[in-house]
Image (tube, rainbow, N blue to C red; front, side, top):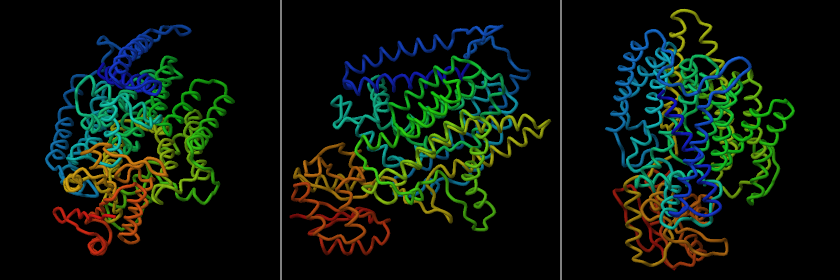
Length: 619
């Protein structure tokens, strides 16, 4: 079965993250360690798959393999449903071609600026056709339809942004390249080990650039693994996989899986564990996979990993008291982890209001299409929250993650971060809570679909998936429209040119550069972690990475208060250098005033394509 192979592949990835992450934490990821990781991962994968394939005795019968062979029973009309895939696959290919033909190198704050309307028509038609197919066809056909739709939904950033999407992927790609070159990066980041081990091992075996792996890893694993996990769980429960796939596509938040970051990879592992947990009560073997993916999430990112471990424990235990204690332990563990890693406690209920919500609050613009589309995010969240109340296991696990988010917001001090980012950690836990609850909600929606008789069932699925899934794809990415103006500008070709020009201008002399995240991402892509300086506040990078660091605070002063030579001299003194650069992107709010003032305070400046302006200072 196709879905069996797909789930096997992502299970191997989870094993590599777990085993390789542990080896990295205990040793390094040099060539000997990578060979050891590969050998141990293959051994663990073989043992796990052998256990899953093994038939399990029940009270009266033998439970068949979760991964059935080619002799599995076929539903009537199987060949006809397979042929019905052709127009759906053709439409998804059209969507992918439209994305690939509209790539951008300039700075934009939304990929949809470059995407033609034909893309949305093709995606809506593909979604409608896929939903109609999933509620009628067997698991293999349903899997292919769901995979094709997810592939389009999660490939937008990878295809549209020629240079790269986001900020974190550039940081992690630079770290992974450093590990490939030196076997380790200091300080060793305990909480990203699962992704670093997986990416570095793939790069070691395939010789692919880490940037290429980073662009495609999480989107590809998500498109392959999510519907595969649904098919395996549905087989254990002896219900239609396609109906659950359709329901899950309608409500699933997709934003975490559109690029490759440790949180995104861990969130994917957590989601797959939650999906497989649907069938764990019916087939005990699935508990092994739930624990596998939970451990992989924990080694990759604790914000997704701790809730995943709590979910696995809740699924494992049978007595209600142990389930409740597991949920409470999961909720308390993350605030304690933040305390252990150096974040101070400062209790304030007021900070709960700063939590970043996983959806946009609906606004009314009296727009026939825009208003309903923007209501999808909160409607899907409400459906998930309501749906999970029918399943005590998922309610406990999702509630544990949500409670952890509230506790972190109220008790952990993030004042060192920019105001816009202080509610981010708690907000991620709300996302994890929704991801954990989504499979249970999808199961309840599937039961509702199945209660509808005749052609109305297919029509209900078509309407739900075509509208909710297509709208969900739009909402998963940054937007610049009448409702939301995103500030998530991408790294552009001019940012790359500015970084090169600064490095050439410095001519080997130590320097710092105060710049926004897209320019810092360009520096990491072009130069890696090329220069650190020892300061009273610890080592700092030549660019303001991370955003909570000392240099970023000086950048904020230059960009928001005044681009004065005094602020720049203070930053240069901190780093112990005599040359500094200040970069202003033309899309910045009030950029004309900032640029004019910086021209007066700097000793020289130059512009690149009227997009990036670089100002040089000395002391």
